[in-house]
Amino acid sequence: MNALETTGLGRRFGRTWALRDCTLAVPAGRVAALVGSNGAGKTTLLHLAVGLLKPTHGQVRVNGAVFGRRGEDLARVAFVAQDKPLFASFTVEEMLRFGRAANPRFDTALARTRVRTYDIPLDRKVRRLSGGQRTLLALALALGKRADLLLLDEPLADLDPLARREVMGALMSAVAESGATVVLSSHVVADLADTCDYLVLLGRGRVQMSGDFDELTDSHCVLTGPADLADRLAHGTVVQLTRTTRQTTALVRGAHHDGAPGVSSRAASLEELVLAYMHNQEATVLPRPSLVETDRGSAA
Ligand SMILES: Nc1ncnc2c1ncn2[C@@H]1O[C@H](COP(=O)(O)OP(=O)(O)OP(=O)(O)O)[C@@H](O)[C@H]1O
Image 1 (tube, rainbow, N blue to C red):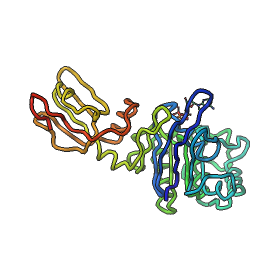
Image 2: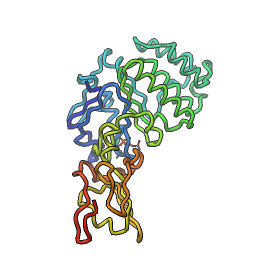
Image 3: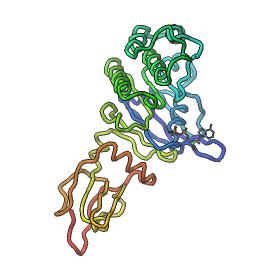
Image 4: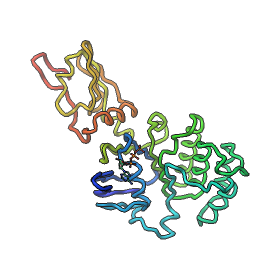
């Protein structure tokens, strides 16, 4: 089953389409990275998924059903918004008590353990917490909810590198223990490669790429060769190309394979893949790559 599924989903604000023709499916039990440049539509997609926004077009299904405002639906989804809304006048302990009162399945022990792990004093008022501590508290509350689907909008943005690693570990444990699904938006692509196994890349409000990390990286490679390699690459296969007077480097669609003489090929990393597609926002589904025959001979 898919934990999150959208069909032709679109949302317009006045004349601006924040999200358009968005059709994607995140299978249950995955840790999915939602990436894209500023203004690509990530927050809009997450808000549509939890019913904070209504679609202009299309449909969202969460855990197989159209998401509603019923208590049962809300209990199965945890959402941490980008601005981490918490009650400023509450202490951390009071926030935990609130979490238990507001959520039937709330696991206070789990949330308290997370708060202790992050060394956040239970008696401190939320307004006195640092930005990163507020994020960690919001994540502890989300994990305590024991939801089937966690939707997290830039949860890593104001965390130090150790806390980022710690949070990603906690999310992976939640997935491993309960089979939950996580969808998290982030600009810190390097932090996602070790923990996420599914990618959704948005560009200008459209889905540019979605699928298993491994399948996506396996179906692209980086070619390096002489400057004229650029002229020999089959039209439509190149996602990003860098050319100097001596050398061409290209990220192309197609599995890593032995290149022609003078052309080296290697697998593309996730970061390279994401950056290449962000750079070329027109690139979506392209034909399989090959190097075309030229009068200089076959390049591959
Ligand atoms: N309430 C709104 N009114 C008008 N335009 C909006 C509104 N919310 C979002 N937009 C526009 O929709 C587009 C997508 O915004 P969104 O916040 O979803 O992007 P994002 O990918 O989350 O960006 P970022 O990475 O910067 O947080 C942007 O062009 C934004 O200006």
